[in-house]
Image 1 (cartoon, rainbow, N blue to C red):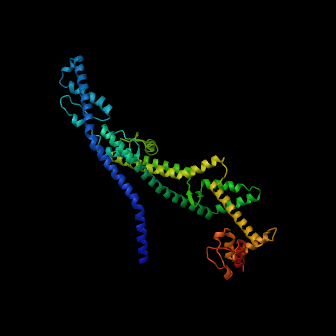
Image 2 (cartoon, helix red, strand yellow):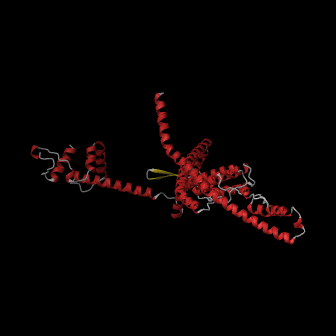
Image 3 (cartoon, helix red, strand yellow):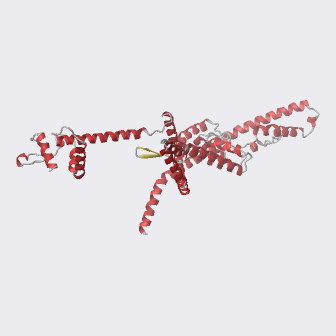
Length: 443
């Protein structure tokens, strides 16, 4: 029990150590987003209100001029008391409401411009604008008008965009690992079901029969097609394994994510069809733009809709790019080699290197045989097999065959007291020393 608790604590500590940097990055980006929204709302709110007041005052002046001209042209109707109010109401309902895309009524006698000002830099638009900077999507409902606000937006983007890209790539890698694991389980389950039904055995039997009938390449072709369509291909590059996913699966994941956005849009009470909602989500996810941002939903629902599908859209795009990279690389390599069934060049180089190593070892064995038996003119295969069997049962012979024939690396082995001198001194002739060493090894 104590060992189990110790193992659980180690697992928990390892998981915490692995997850803490990722959670810290996401929390820091969240705080950075909130700080940017508060900064933009503080800097731009007063300037935006003043701009809207100037615009409304200009509209009111234009309405008054229209009323004066109408009074001169319609002298009889202008004498009525409600003529001016009726004219302003008509202009407001038919013209201003259409141009501003909202209902408001100008009163010629009461100064209600402050009431008609619609603040843009509230909590939700400020957060959406800060999010649009981090995700490079763009947000048209609230834009900084002051030079100081524009400067803050530039600095905010220079710092925040790399952080957001880093977070998106991090989430994309996590999602790619999950997708690869699920796809691997799907392939294993499909293979087990096919094996249980006997489909794989029948297919293998048919292919064996076709091979025996003189069609030796069919198995390779079918194996290549089955590998490309059904099974996940693993390419060994060095000692690492690069997992690949079919491009059709990547595209399906992206389309399903966009379709999910369309379903959420229509379920939340949107006034668009499913196809239009799907197009809006596709623009948010694939094109990274808020040009088709929904405005007929509730403000809070719109905020969460955009926040979820823009933020996770970047992660899904990063995941699909990560998964499709190796598959596209394989496709481009096949196109480069005219569609032939090829192996990676590194595997071929490793095979050539292995052949070179084997040839070098064979030459070493031949040289050792020449030194052991200098009287032999021709070296036969029996001699090579004999030295190999001797190497198998005598490790000293293996070391002797593989060591480099250098005088300063051969240990001095004295055979008589007359030859016993200093360790770094070798007065004996080199050939005599090698002969003594050889006799000592094989004695």
